[in-house]
Amino acid sequence: MKFTLSIAMNPLDQLGELARAAEEAGFSSIALPDSLFYSETVSADYPYTPDGSRFWTEETPWADPLIAAASMGAVTERLTFYTSVLKLGSRNPVLLARQVNSVAALTGGRFGLGLGVGWSPEEFRWCGAPYEKRGKRVDEAIEVLRLILDGGMVEFHGEFFDFDKLRMSPAPPSRVPFYIGGHTDVALRRAARVADGWSSAMMKFDDLRDTIAKLRGLLADQGRADDPFEYQAVCIDKFGLDGYREQGDIGVTDIITMPWVFDGLGFDAEVGPKLDSIKKFGDEIIAKIGD
Image (cartoon, rainbow, N blue to C red; front, side):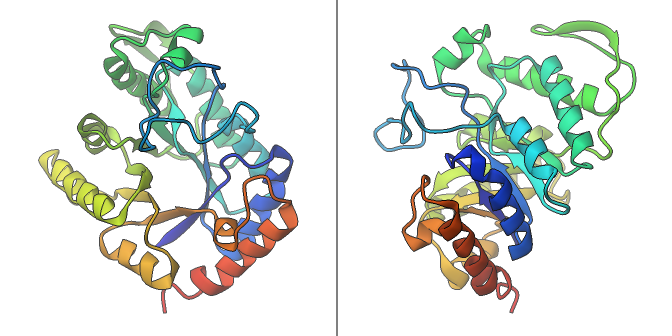
């Protein structure tokens, strides 16, 4: 069982201190959220709230996740960092590969790429990407990313992306794991087909259990039943030692959490009390979870 600290929507000047405290407390990773901008109006529902509304505002702080990973990597030694999840549909995969190469090198290989399609039509169109055929475009973009990140001189000629031989150096010091986010059948099939793991958004325990079981079946269909595969979970109704152990029993390998929430602190709280919450979580949960 691993624990990951989510830094979503926290003030950017706190990130370094939060990362150092997480490493000292025994967290294995930092989960980095992604939001390009806040459009005044949006033409699609947010898929992870009951009423489709966004639970952040135009003033909520967001850092570019790859820049944040490089920054926090510079003040830590063991923590890994992964996007949870980066919206690939609105990005060019060749440019993104350059960024991932850089952050992987700067962190000594302590970086994983969590990927999703994206849900906001405005983010696609205002960044110059078509909203139509977004699923197929993302599948091809994943191929491009893996091809470039694996190193060497490569070329690609597809429906959406086309380039002759190129090489990006340095290649990552180790293979960059890909994690796929999303709860739809299409996203789960994509995870089973191409990813090293799956990352949930906010889910209740029963739904999480059913989804993991479905993913295991899909992995078996792909001939990958025995492959290493991460299940990164944000479970909203099972907490504490017993709750986390129950998550482990259904297959969760990595619990994504914000310890200060359990102490009644908001995203915009001062950093000191958050550091206390992280330490307490390490002492009372991480240090005891294997007992």
